Image 1 (spheres, rainbow, N blue to C red):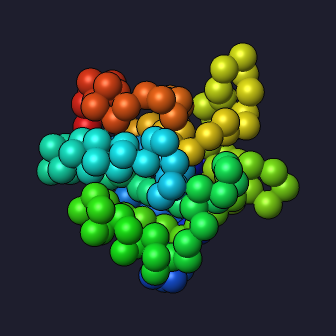
Image 2 (cartoon, helix red, strand yellow; image 1 turned 180 degrees about the horizontal axis):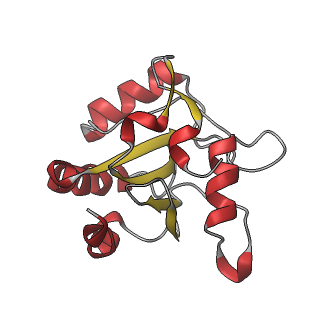
Length: 159
């Protein structure tokens, strides 16, 4: 697949779709978790989203339970947590695996297109972020400890 828009995904409420509806938008794709030391980044992700959504940014949250069992809840629990604790309004999706043989095809593609430190494809932890341009091309990977506010200046030129 040439770009991320072609990948099938499932929304947090179970609807099957592709990311085609986000063609023409700049995307920040993030593997998230509710019980992680980086979980407060939900606040920063939401702030960056709200400041830039009118200019074409969409943050996409993909819960993942592969790192220290830090996303143990089901989709309803995750959605409730995100809404009540962080007032998340950006799109959230069903839980996925980001590493291993059962990794979601979207994350296989993201990791291949934007490798990590020393060319590693594996995602090291929750809140790894992938910046995708309006055409669906993966532009850059950001580490879990890169706060959303700190990468906002790198996002803006793509809007």
